[in-house]
Length: 174
Image (cartoon, rainbow, N blue to C red; front, side, top):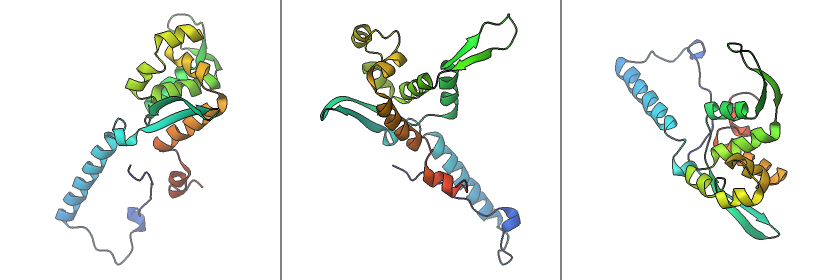
């Protein structure tokens, strides 16, 4: 897995006095490196090397196993919207949030971050949904996982999605 550290370099106004300006070739090489870095970062979400295996054990026995992947900011926003309850408004008026359900938000994050193939087998399992009284896949997360288990899964999702102490410290947010 790649290193997810973020480091800050010097900005133009911080360039040391003894540094000489870049040549045209160095500028082009730098642009090529930037493009390469951007393309590499853009493809990482669904690369299997970024998946993490989650194992849920109770009483020493493995009960459930599934994989999670990093989530994007857009996916996180969709999870937040899905966990809100909205007031009924007149046509043409903006929606107004009445209530945000934190537990539902956490479940949506886990459901969304679960690798598609595993989501179909675990959270979308019709026999399990029927037996546990779950109306949709995201409800299965609440039916199956305990609060602490959800917390540990979310810690892993946060880590692989770029939310970790090392990145915050490198960005100067500590």
